[in-house]
Length: 354
Image (cartoon, rainbow, N blue to C red; front, side, top):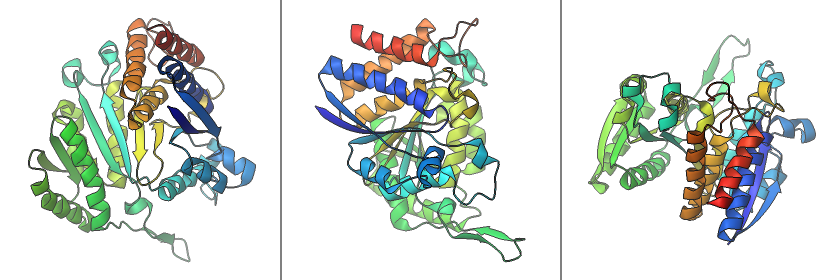
């Protein structure tokens, strides 16, 4: 099979972690007799510095003409510390989501037996936790009308959703629940927000089409609390853009490291696969960043192309590396840390030899 993959390393540690995922994909290609063609493209602060646009038209064309996008991270302190900056790296991410029609972010949250002690939660609470957060990506307050008054003393952000947008993301969430434990939690704030009431009404109307799925509804503040108290009670969670941003980041720490969790952004055109963490500029160029989330994102990429055995081979390699203690300093034991590139090399060799 021939795979055309757009590679958007981005900023900070992005180039280092993406390079390890490419090593792993290359090893898979050799093992399973695939041909992989990569096309690199600019995004984020790097793109602003070079062409003045965080998501250039050329990058968009490369993404549109690819089977999938392998994405690193965006963000740079010089923009984070300048609230008056008119062009920001994050605008590139939002533009990419909008132009590619990436209406859903999928974040699987899985605990790893060898790393349970790294979780901030007690062993009995976190052991066995395994759920998916499905976040709507192209609507809500992030994309609604916003602005400031002339005297700059008043600001507003508008949250807007349509029934069509809600139905689209709910269909995907019901589909994921059907493939798992057949339980779906709809997270909203229907006691306060009109948009949340539309979400709840739409979900309730759709329940009849998915009678094998057990559906419950939870206000976002309660969901945030229960996620910490009883993470094992959840199977698939679905929610709007801003709530999903917060809930999925909260969920990510359950495993003990942001460097462990992958994600996929799927939609109308080409899907994007990326780690959930940021650009971590303090570690850029030091060869210490954890590449596992990016490697597991590559596994999700392979799975999206129906290469199920290939995806399993990547996950098996990751599990073996964690059990063997071949990990970066954020999750290392007894000071035995490997470099980013060393983890990538170990995973590559394991795939080739097993």
